[in-house]
Length: 303
Ligand SMILES: *[C@@H]1O[C@H](CO)[C@@H](O)[C@H](O)[C@H]1NC(C)=O
Ligand SMILES: *[C@@H]1O[C@H](CO)[C@@H](O)[C@H](O)[C@H]1NC(C)=O
Ligand SMILES: *[C@@H]1O[C@H](CO)[C@@H](O)[C@H](O)[C@H]1NC(C)=O
Ligand SMILES: *[C@@H]1O[C@H](CO)[C@@H](O)[C@H](O)[C@H]1NC(C)=O
Ligand SMILES: *[C@@H]1O[C@H](CO)[C@@H](O)[C@H](O)[C@H]1NC(C)=O
Ligand SMILES: *[C@@H]1O[C@H](CO)[C@@H](O)[C@H](O)[C@H]1NC(C)=O
Ligand SMILES: *[C@@H]1O[C@H](CO)[C@@H](O)[C@H](O)[C@H]1NC(C)=O
Ligand SMILES: *[C@@H]1O[C@H](CO)[C@@H](O)[C@H](O)[C@H]1NC(C)=O
Ligand SMILES: *[C@@H]1O[C@H](CO)[C@@H](O)[C@H](O)[C@H]1NC(C)=O
Image (cartoon, rainbow, N blue to C red):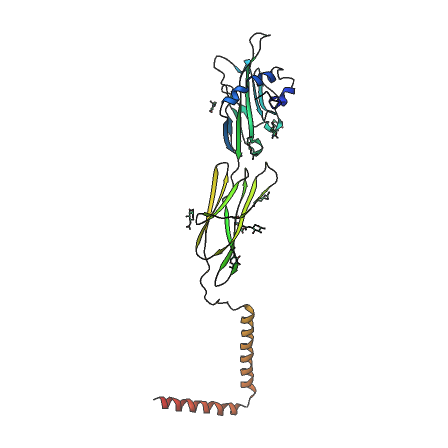
């Protein structure tokens, strides 16, 4: 691989950077290619340490070195030249520090925007004024930032119900995580094909994710929804049950029916009261005696 301009960092334009760095970066490309790139994972909000490729021996000091922590070869994260801290990108102000021995870059709190590839470049200054400084190492470290998704929320809604079948809309959603997740659904451990939608304000913002599908439930079925992001997994399950059998639906009396019934009963009672008051009294009494008599004869007949 040739020495591509991608290794020409924006910080090369900074006056405090030695002109030689560009060349030295090129010379040191070999280091990066021969090593497995280190990957560090961190959660947004946590503190993370990115290891550097060089440790300054106790016999030496930071004053004799140049240390550059940069991101994506373009942004100065933290840099020390001859022991003095150099101007850094605003994004990293007040949340970064360096271990002056092993040159680990500490970052706290980590933000989603910090995701990406970093390089630690270490030079030792020559002891003689005209001597060349030597690049001790230049290695990338990849920082993968994740943010936790909420526990998946699984819900099921009956969309059509009859004796033969129950159709349900099953939905699973999870929010506030990073990076863009995968979401999968399984019915009794069989994967389902479903519609997935993601929402995020930008590619570097938290994601909300939703999966949705319809099915006909014929028997109790265990549904599991799984959200995966950067090697992390969150699952929730819901038992989908078919509503009970095919009994004639017992519709509870509605308020209208109750009201109508009450009104009829009240009118009936009112009518009886009015009748009792206004019909001729003795006529009623005769009627009443007749009823008593017939009841008595019936009772006798029963004995
Ligand atoms: C550097 O030193 C710190 C303690 O100051 C330690 O936590 C860290 O693991 C060290 N890193 C490496 C790469 O040795
Ligand atoms: C990092 O650099 C690559 C090319 O070197 C570029 O495509 C990408 O947009 C850069 N990313 C950021 C966040 O600057
Ligand atoms: C960092 O802290 C200094 C001093 O407290 C403050 O003046 C500066 O605005 C801070 N920078 C950022 C980016 O917060
Ligand atoms: C985070 O950074 C790594 C390394 O540069 C990159 O591969 C990955 O795509 C980034 N993630 C996102 C979601 O941008
Ligand atoms: C789960 O989702 C349902 C329907 O989508 C919603 O009504 C409910 O509030 C959600 N529950 C939580 C804890 O988010
Ligand atoms: C996905 O949504 C489209 C349109 O909204 C619909 O036609 C299709 O049937 C859905 N697929 C599944 C598996 O639900
Ligand atoms: C994601 O979901 C949360 C909680 O439901 C909500 O507050 C937020 O606005 C959603 N984000 C987007 C980008 O829709
Ligand atoms: C459920 O069954 C009905 C009737 O057989 C059919 O019309 C419908 O498409 C089915 N729904 C699903 C999600 O399979
Ligand atoms: C559903 O399946 C999941 C995963 O296979 C399991 O953890 C859970 O206990 C099951 N739930 C029920 C109610 O069977």
